[in-house]
Image 1 (cartoon, rainbow over the protein chains, first blue to last red):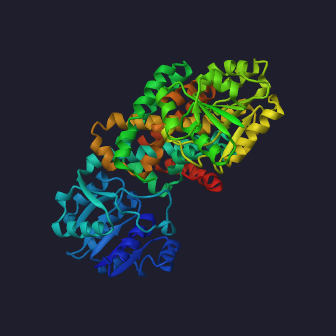
Image 2 (tube, helix red, strand yellow):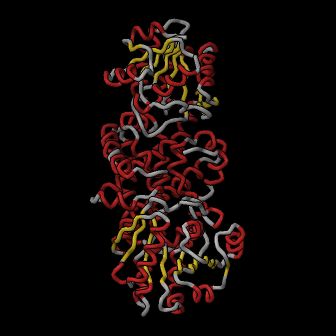
Image 3 (cartoon, rainbow over the protein chains, first blue to last red):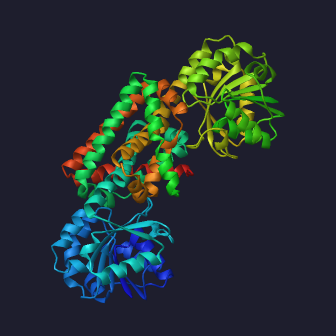
Amino acid sequence: MVITIIGLGLIGGSLAIDLREKGIAETLIGVDNNAKNANDALRIGLVDEIRKLDEAIELADLIILAIPVDQTKMLLQEVLDKIKASTAVMDVGSTKEGICLVADKHKKRSNFVATHPIAGTENFGPLGAIRGLFNNKLTIICDADKSAEFAIDKVKSMYTAVGMKIINMNSKEHDLHAAYVSHLSHISSFTLGLTVLEIEKSEETIFELAGSGFASTVRLAKSSADMWAPIFQQNSHHLSRALGAYIDKLVLFKEYIEKHETGKIHDLIKEANDIRRILDGKNLTL
Amino acid sequence: MVITIIGLGLIGGSLAIDLREKGIAETLIGVDNNAKNANDALRIGLVDEIRKLDEAIELADLIILAIPVDQTKMLLQEVLDKIKASTAVMDVGSTKEGICLVADKHKKRSNFVATHPIAGTENFGPLGAIRGLFNNKLTIICDADKSAEFAIDKVKSMYTAVGMKIINMNSKEHDLHAAYVSHLSHISSFTLGLTVLEIEKSEETIFELAGSGFASTVRLAKSSADMWAPIFQQNSHHLSRALGAYIDKLVLFKEYIEKHETGKIHDLIKEANDIRRILDGKNLTL
């Protein structure tokens, strides 16, 4: 089938690599309003051709929206307006409720499939694309009952081809869980980066004392502002609660540390250690 | 030389592996008041023999204290009391000022070398020990002017043998930087683990939605309570300031998210992204 990828960044570009390799796409068309990204993607062979939005929509059997979630919300209606009746449209955003609300208002709602592949790195742009990014990872399809069977089938065959397992979830439930398990991690990491950069005026000292533990915790602080700022905005309700809970616990930690309540600190750490059981069960690669 | 390692955990055990391999220790003596750890260390060949503290001190040319920092503070005086004049004693703790204050009161202060090798994993105990943990990493010697030349020489030859680069630092300065670059990372990670565990009553959901980003940020939450609670206590002054700064920034993030100030969130993230330049310069392996 002809696949159009709108947004040739880390996710769009990495999908392109695997879709070509698995023989799923007979033609891969790229769209990117950033001319450098479009040129880079064509030059390194991620896509076969770069086209204008209207042409790319018209030619496609499957359209993948791989752009920041605010742009997805803005563009979705236009894309649905212009597709053929047999074209499926999917997004890959990290928030789902707001995007689904836009889709719900459209008469071609059933052509759309809301998805969130749980895969990524802290890098971005077409040059950040990597082979096999999705292999053995999980993707979520939200509100599947609102999508037509033919659209779900196209999306599932695409995800299965790149090696993903698929689960279903309600879009509201998705955003709640994503706030805690994904979005909060990013904020804690951005904030750690900001705090250390502010205090450690001497970069030499960060350079010297930073171990692999710090590097691991602060890794996500390298992530794209264009991608993450709109995610935080769209998930503000759940994220505000998650941040509130996180800050409350930090305040407790701080109080115990100031009062030298080492026994209570020990208890908190033992409780946190329980995360090992869950992560080890999942055997996540870093 | 005969090396006595007191505390056969991740650091003591990993040092034992490399010291044997590099031919530095003609005999490796282990001491651990946890009988299981002592047996495990002997069984897997980390040390040649397990001895009681007094014997192990008497026989040693170099004594490595690889126990939690509260125990180091308690044991250091007794060890210095009992050593031969030619024996060097070193610790490997993540806080330095409090330990140096104890050493400073002892008439054999110059036999002691305060050190902090920047190496570790989130695992612990002798079975967590790994070959090559210290290779190409950095170790810090604090207040070196208070140590005798012979003691510094023994410690340096030991660290050089296992592949470490050595820098010098004042113990007070060390604790300030460690608060921001190491200890704060651990608290942010413990707290993230606690927050997610609390909200996500259904473990199945954490299991499903946790990606490599979450795993990276929360990795340190697996770390040992016995090791970290005393570190936080001993570095409470600097850590309280670091946590205060971290919480202030989180509160700002929360406020911007609640007010949908996406431009300001974008600015904060761009600022945090600067950590990439520093980490990439260091080329830290996770």
